[in-house]
Amino acid sequence: MAYRVILVPVMGDAADPAALALTQAIAGRLRAHVVGLHVRSPISIAVTGGMFEGAYMTPDLLNALEEAGRTSAAEARGVFRSWQEDAGIEMAAAPGTPARLTAEWSDVEAPVSAEIGRQGRTADLIVLARSARSYTEGTDEALQGALFQSGRPVLLVPGPAPADPFSTVVIAWNDSREAAHAVAAAWSLIGRAKRIVLFAGGDETLRRSAGRLAVHLAWRGYAPATVVGEASTDAGSNLLALAARENAGLIVMGAYSHSRLRHFVLGGVTSDVLRQATIPVLMAH
Image (cartoon, rainbow, N blue to C red; front, side, top):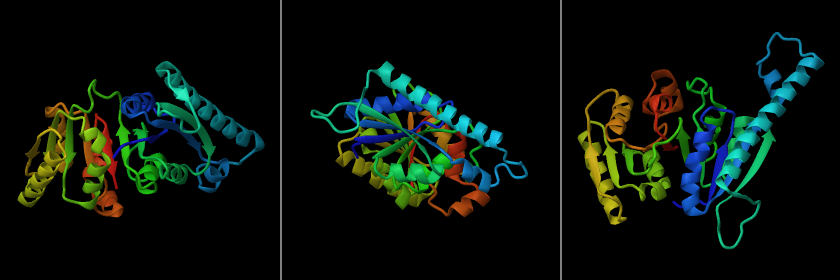
């Protein structure tokens, strides 16, 4: 999959600059268009949602909340513009000829999850900084919108990426629809790898399936893929440990192949990786 339009929500997280830097590494080679987006919830949603339950909403408090929203939007815009100017990227609102690396900025007052999902549907990839907030289910609206409402792959960036993030790629393969979707969504990144490692857990059936994927990668002319299977009940930790041992710069995996409720109650590989990954993770649901 070639990424020509990349959406980057800039939500005031510490990893926002890292997400933009990695976006540049992807977009520059593809001459893609980068859409920076900041979304802030309307004050009415915060009030009716109980965020300020028990507080008396005086005009002064409402004004203060609105001012805080405007400030956060201005700060996000500043982060994006600094990145764009430092990288020498031209701002553009429409495609040019010939194709070139361009960017545009938008800030919107709307329900965060729904708006990121809506705008993500008209992008090829969403690059999202991992929030410094808690990563339990349902607490990060930007991630919820990107993963579950956009229908697009999400590249989660926890912090500065390795110098050559696509040199070694680890693919978490569980023979699911979501994993297949993630691999297809990552073709342009997997194709840049010098080494590919397929993590198939400890199940012999999965290892055979991963072997078929390795053959498929070979047919595409990609780097030879190694299949690794490790029997364990803690697949998430094993996956992350493997990525560390292999000095991988990217993990590709399907997200939430079981129900979200099951993950909320029992945890799962997706949740473990969301919380603990130290390198970028491309996920697709």
